[in-house]
Length: 312
Image 1 (cartoon, helix red, strand yellow):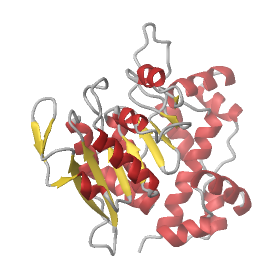
Image 2 (cartoon, rainbow, N blue to C red; image 1 turned 30 degrees about the vertical axis):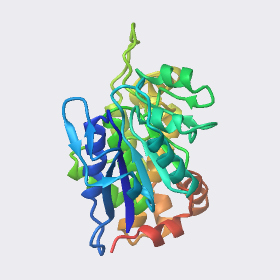
Image 3 (tube, rainbow, N blue to C red; image 1 turned 45 degrees about the horizontal axis):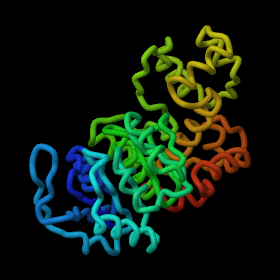
């Protein structure tokens, strides 16, 4: 069973901690009695949160042996971090544990040195402080989460849900993650590259792209071009690309490619279609074309993905 350890340092943001608890403890996988073992390890028996104290059953010594360590956000990013918490994070990293921070939890991760030389994100209001305090970290304030493989970071609040579901998707596949999303009453996926909802002094005009996105999803079997998408949206290619970047954090064709891969994941998990048929249904045209894109984004071949995540 996959062991999830959630740290509870003093000053923890209860929402971030509860997000991880709720998502991972409610994941259901056919044929398994439980998908995850979830435990919360407190810095002390009673952890001071902003509006109340949390009483934890486990201390930091129980973090050993975790497959994934979750670091929730902290209310005061200027508060000193205890050496015990930093030592726990460093020990987890040294043992190969996957580590993920939510919101301002990135400050604890950076203070431990684990983020040195890596790309990371945090809540957009704290991004400049993170970059200033830890110059060896490449801070990207414009995304929901960053996946570096063994080290992941997310933006604030709801982005923590996106990160947790992304981890479920990595562990058990798209169909299980979609069920977990339905349990949390949220969309099945917002990609990590999607822009945070940042408040700017003078927000630029934007287009509600949802109808265009829905149309693109309904046309995955077709060989859509940028010209065809722009014509459907009644926009120039330049304007369409600019508004896509503003609202999704990527280009129309890259968004389309990611959507094709996610649809292929779902079909590989839930249908008896051959790989060639899945490639045709998702607009890749050939299994070779799908295999190249799929392997680049997912990290494994369609055949191996089906073997690992095929629903019973």
